[in-house]
Length: 407
Ligand SMILES: NC(=O)c1ccc[n+]([C@@H]2O[C@H](COP(=O)([O-])OP(=O)(O)OC[C@H]3O[C@@H](n4cnc5c(N)ncnc54)[C@H](O)[C@@H]3O)[C@@H](O)[C@H]2O)c1
Ligand SMILES: O=P(O)(O)OC[C@@H](O)[C@@H](O)[C@H](O)[C@H](O)CO
Image 1 (spheres, rainbow, N blue to C red):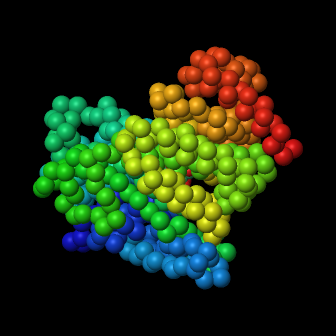
Image 2: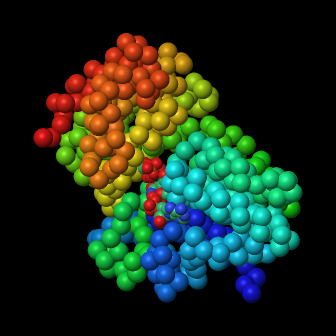
């Protein structure tokens, strides 16, 4: 039996392979991926290793700085009892997820089953961290897991399972291993930058508020709410606005889109003058440092080696138009501080224009606009009252953006 501490990661996709697993490996964990995709799990077990390509235009001719080798990984299918055995494992210390926010509903019953089995097997304390792009994703998962636990199991989980929220930041775009001369379909391309900020006080272990086996590259904080909003309402807000405006103009990648002067002006206006101004007021961020944080993010969007797809960044527009999410969330925060939202209104309007037959939420949204009428639908989605200033600005921007649309 391996003496290494073990980690289970739900979702062997981009963030799992390209961000979370490399940090876990570097910190001495044995990484077990779990996924619903049988083909992916079989490949992980056949190859047991893959490369993480650091995509940087200052790297070699093909835009790579280096390739990190991630070895000795294992996969278990999330629909089998093999996963429950893994959750029981005495060396298990941490469970992380990167499956997409709506999927947390689906993994919660399995996690609850695993927790019950772990208690019955006399297992020790573990921590769970959901690395999804949403405020309080782990808290949402905890609530769903607890709904499947009662009596002694629920009591045991309260004492022995830490659920810590986090903010997770690294751009991991679609990647074609063949184009990069890689042998393994598991290889993944990532930007060099990463930031993983975790709510320290929620962690359980020998020393409460810390992991028994610390993760190199993870930062603990007791003020996660501020970091969470800073990331979602800056990086993800800017990313979404860039992607939706780019898509409207017929552009395909984030770097191409942010190179467009009209798009860059909307993104800068939304991030500096609107979302940024509100974040600085609410969280007392230093304005100069926050301005630098925004500009660094724009440089990350400009990274032509990453070649991120506007369709990936724009995926699931209705989730992105959620009231607490990256577009409406900062607009509502601006409303609280009396800040006018000219550019965020453009971003929201661009999201409403997002027309992609391959994206179920885009199809649903475009149908709802036709059936309900844009003005009513904007009220329903955003919560801004009909004929309020923001509501009018969104409608006006929607009309204005028709002129940006590539037919
Ligand atoms: N890619 C990025 O740049 C990035 C950055 C930060 C955060 N995130 C967040 O990370 C999460 C995952 O994003 P991604 O880009 O890695 O997506 P992805 O599609 O590459 O990976 C998701 C994986 O989850 C698996 N999955 C789906 N349902 C499952 C289930 N029921 N049980 C187990 N596995 C299941 C899928 O098969 C897939 O392998 C999202 O919440 C995203 O917002 C992504
Ligand atoms: O993953 P989503 O769909 O919530 O958002 C798309 C991108 O903005 C996102 O994945 C970013 O690349 C990531 O959040 C960078 O840290």
